[in-house]
Amino acid sequence: MEVTIRPLTTDLIPAYLEFFDNRAFSETDVNGPCYCTCPTQTSEEIDQMVSESGGDIKGTLRRYAEKMLHEGKITGYLAFHDEVVIGWCNAGDMNGYVPNRYQFIPDFARDIAVGKTMSIVCFAIAPEYRGKGVSTALLERVVSDAAEQGYAAVEGYAYVKSGEEFDFKGPARLYEKSGFSAAAEQNGVVVMRRSLL
Image: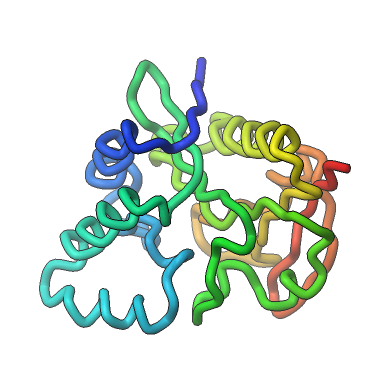
């Protein structure tokens, strides 16, 4: 299967939204609905968003995502197959992710950073494309671009044990296949790092 990876740009916002509207999650997926807004929101901003949701959680998340996308507050890569988005990786400069109650980047990871770090905080792969190398293709593009942009390292934050069918942070074995190794572990999360210098 041929997969094309593209960095998220403003012209791809409609494709991003269409993916999260229609393909990112199955009806029973515990991770949906989601539009990947929380990694760059403070806990207070998340609370405000939730308070506005009423009975329309998906609509509220989408409205926030659309605004944040146009403001450049959601960064990452889209995976395409036959010009249809089949996957997403939320990746960006570590400093662009604010600390919040969900700890997309654990505090201890910030403490052990080794310079300018590209962080990967989420994968969303359409259910029918999971296990077909889409996450690996996204990960390899993140690493390639981070190296070109002068980053010292790329990191992901995998759960040590996950009972979920699809681990949105990516399992440790995904990172290991792409040359990452465990840099530290705490509270059930392992920092998977690939040094680029």
